[in-house]
Image 1 (cartoon, rainbow, N blue to C red):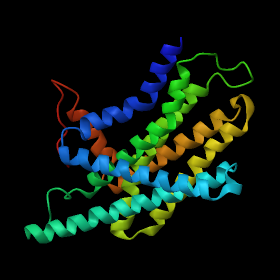
Image 2 (spheres, rainbow, N blue to C red):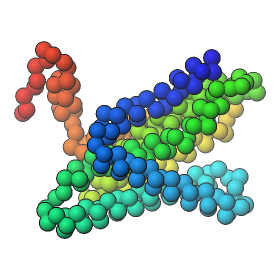
Image 3 (tube, rainbow, N blue to C red):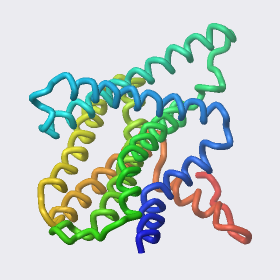
Image 4 (tube, rainbow, N blue to C red):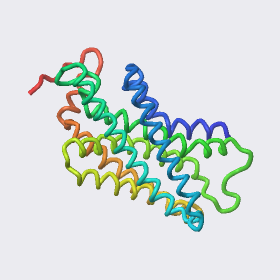
Length: 256
């Protein structure tokens, strides 16, 4: 039974992100490099959070304190990687004497790659210990714990990975266009979803699991819709894409 739990939770949390990596990133070595770079930047934010947590000794037992500064550091390093890539783009333009380089031609795709890198590394650290515990020994729930702990942890990890991807697109767009209210939205929604995890640890029996999951996935839907909109997507374009990928015999919808 523990093996089934491990496999089910692992595929729940990482199945969709792995498919995104496989079909949108893995075929381009430059995207893979940028994804690894962004994952490294997320690790640096985690390192700073750990250092602060160790330095401020009286607050070691205050989970909310560590969570707030962890979110701030993550968004700060998201800004740093945007700055780094923006400067790299400027340098390459001067070097090649062209108006725009192929590497950074699609800013939204670049933001998507960085966001997915943040999300994959965040998801790996969020669930790896939980998955290890799911293999046993022991049975969850003997002391009042919710038997849904593993699946809820997997769903929250999936939500955070996808949110980081959408946040990356919104955050980069806000800096490119100087619409800083979108930057504030990313930071506040990140704080909101992260704070919802505190509700799960504060209640016995997982009574607030449905509320925290629902609020998190509503935030994911809103942020994803915003990211798609900012990247130039629309419902019309989605319907056309679905119609064109319907397989043999499907009639493509002509452009309007």
